Image (tube, rainbow, N blue to C red; front, side):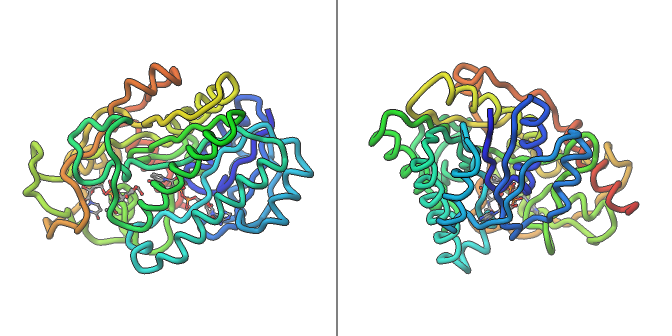
Length: 334
Ligand code: NAD
Ligand code: UD1
């Protein structure tokens, strides 16, 4: 199939593009490079020996999106393009709503005009909010506390309304838990600009020596060691989940909401220990205040992903730390 991947130059998008190319699909990427670099195209080619078609465009640009659909017979869309930093979304709500909501509306309109009605969308476990108990199941009530989360909740609603309005649409809303790690080649991975907000890239920078010490945000949560528990998932497993979701859109119409996680919770201190083991580097840390908005535990019920998509994560925390460190260590040698 010919797949349009929005945000295909980013962290999760680039790994998914590699899986698609290796699965024999043709790939067209649209990305405005606001959080990625054009060099990712060479990286994808180095891994897969194939080069996707690339449009450096903003998905909010109606004319550009119509042109992409006119120039390519797209069978399905995987939609990653979006802004994703929680703190930034609180400071810049208009930018977040405009980018994520308007972008998706323009994309869906172009899809409709282009006769393509299959979409796989990047949602987030953030929509489970603060009031559910783990493990999180897809039928639990959703809520959120920041503009980033609201964009995900609103877009889930918009895409469901679209599928109700026109039964030809096939929509999969994938709720990611915490994607980490990197491609086993060490060629692509996550390298955020500035000081990372998320735990895994922060640990990797401390291990690399570019940040002095990790702050562990609270050790008085109701968890086995008091630190926050999350469901970390290898980005390659996550990418494979998208190919399964794509298969679903070919065989079915309507909407499915599916968690992509491992169903295993790992605490901050357990992740630090696993990273130390994988890298052989000691990670200095200090316990600090809780981060506002954080919950104690977040992990997925993955029964639906297995039942509906036939997908299950294969990699464990050791694999995630090994591949994440391999990517960071390669970057240090450049
Ligand atoms: P990323 O920032 O690495 O990738 C997003 C890509 O989209 C970037 O290459 C960026 O340049 C591009 N982009 C953003 N706005 C655009 C626009 N208007 N037009 C064209 N391109 C645009 O992020 P990621 O971690 O790969 O996340 C991908 C998606 O998954 C996002 O929608 C994110 O909200 C969602 N998600 C990510 C996580 C996570 O922990 N990484 C968790 C849950 C959900
Ligand atoms: C965060 C976002 C979430 C988003 C997800 C993926 C918040 C409140 N939540 O989730 O909406 O979908 O990223 O982008 O920002 N931690 C530390 N020290 C650090 C960083 C994190 O102790 O320097 C702890 C956190 O308190 C948490 C765990 O590590 O317990 C994981 O944090 P993080 O990687 O930021 O992910 P989430 O908080 O799950």
